[in-house]
Amino acid sequence: MYDDSSARIVAGLHEWLTTAPPGARLPSSRALVAQYGASPVTVQKALRTLASQGVVETRPGVGTFVRAVRVPHAHDFGWQTAALGPRTRPGQQLSRALHTAPNDVIALHSGYPDRELLPERLVRSAFTRAARSDAAVTRPPTAGLPDLQAWFAAELGGAAPTGVTPPAPSDVVVFPGSQSSLSTVFRALVGAGRPLLVESPTYWGAILAAEQVGVQLVPVPSGPRGPDPDELARAFDRTGARALYAQPSFANPTGARWSPDLADEVLRLAREHGAFVIEDDWAHDFGIAQDVVPLAARDDGGHVVYLRSLAKSVSPAVRVAGLVARGPARDRILADAQAESLYVSGMLQAVALDVVTQPAWRTHLRGLRQQLAARRDLLLGALREHAPAARVDTVPQGGLNLWVRLPDTTDVARLVRDCDAAHVVVAAGDEWFPAEPTGPFLRLNYSGPNPGAFPEGARVLGEVLARQAG
Image (cartoon, rainbow, N blue to C red; front, top):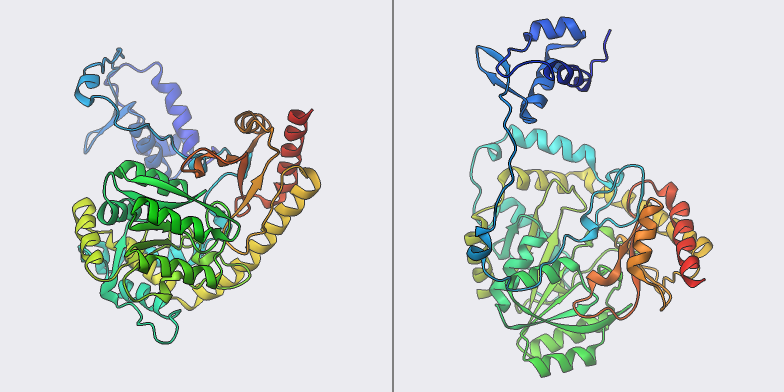
């Protein structure tokens, strides 16, 4: 009896196809079921795989046939050089944080949490329910499903102190992920050629979004406690900027969290200069020591534009984010979003709402906090034991990453290559700087797969550093 995997059938048919002439008819499904001892479903899956590979074609009611061989030839795309013209800005390569690593490596580079840290059962159940609902066949409102808008508004409003008016559901615009919303906000509120203040280092995706929109980035030094308020004030005065992009809670990549005093000072500066603060609360669900209190909860004057994504904490397959903005800024953002994508998939919105309104969602988040703490401490301990030259100056109290300072003489590009060769994938810190890097850094993800391999990964990193030092 053959293994019932469709891969076995695909391999067997590939062998048969090497001698079959174009147009030859494959054995019937019934014959293949008998030949391979497989189910009809498995046989059909194998045939679909072959069709997707372009080696067979199915004619409904007739059968499956060998496709005619197409002779390959060289393509000449030279005409596109004239049609495209010169590149307007340097091309940004795909961030290393998004690279898919093979299963046999130690992956410390990713920007997403391990599948084991996701509410998988809740997500699967939510997709099943959403597929049976009207969300599967109807177009949602442009600004988002009303119930999901209400959830985003209520969550932010629940953190508002006495005397601050909470946001209304109508202040919320739902986006297909945070990256899309960043491009829209930068385009709608800043505009090409105009200055945008950013912490340095900061999220590489925000740098990319700003470059794509043509916004002029103005770096403001930011350390373990956030940006220097004096430097921020000078940057506002010098540039006339009317917007600051910031991550007050567990910044990516540094893990920095603003104190209440710094939050108040930044809000004061924004009001004084008539400016927006674009708050990226990407790590809202990843607090370890305590819950996140967004900067936006302190503001009801429309200065803070608040972005809250669910893709990392719910599932990367559920790319849904909520953006809260008040006044004319919200109308301008919505107009730009509508021109860009019309609306966000109602199915994905329904799934996101289903997950975050289940009682088990809060239970999941409490367990997640404990798992993140254990993984963070495991990687920290491994670095201290096996790679003491790699310093973590501030232990993050939330988020997913460690920001690691390397010795000043480190050749980071060579270190990354040497780690790759030893099957350890790390991410150089250079791409998180909007200007020249201020030193050699790595950003290591402690929420990635196989935490049991963290000590081995740290050992490899320590050996590579030692070879460079020697």
